[in-house]
Amino acid sequence: MAPLIALVVGTALARLAGLAGADPLDAWPPALRVGLALMFVVTGVAHFVEPRRSGLVAMVPPALPRPDLLVTVTGALEIAGAVALLVPATARWAAAGLGLLMLAMFPANVSAARRRLTLAGRPVTPLARRTALQLVFVAAAAVISFGP
Image (cartoon, rainbow, N blue to C red; front, side, top):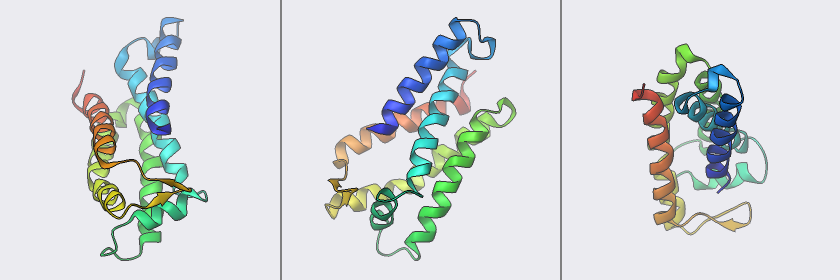
C-alpha cells in the first residue's frame, strides 16, 4: 500500500505546489512524474533495507538464478528511473523503461502470492489486489511515456 500512497500523495502535493506558483508543476503530467518518482524511490530503497530486502529476495521465482543480485539490480534501476523521471528530457524514456520493468517483475508477485510468502512479517498482497495496483502503476508510467 505504501507505493500507492507515495504515488497519490506525491502527485497531489506536486500539483498543489504547481497551483501555488511552482510553474514546472503547473499541470498534471509533471505532477504525476513527481508522484511516480516518489513511488519508485520508496520501492527502490526497499530493495536494500531489511527486512524488506529478504522478503523481496524470497519473492524471486525459484527458477531464476541469483535472486539477491536480481533484487539489487532492480532496486538500482528503480532508483535511477525515479531520478530520470524528474528530468524532462529523459522522463518519457524513463517512464517507458520503468513500465517494462514493472511488467518484467510481475511474475515475482505471482510466484510469491501462489507460494503464500510473507514480506517483512506480513503476507504478500493477494494477487487480485496486486494486479489492480500494478495496472495503476503501469498506467501512470504509460501516461507519462505517451502523454502530452
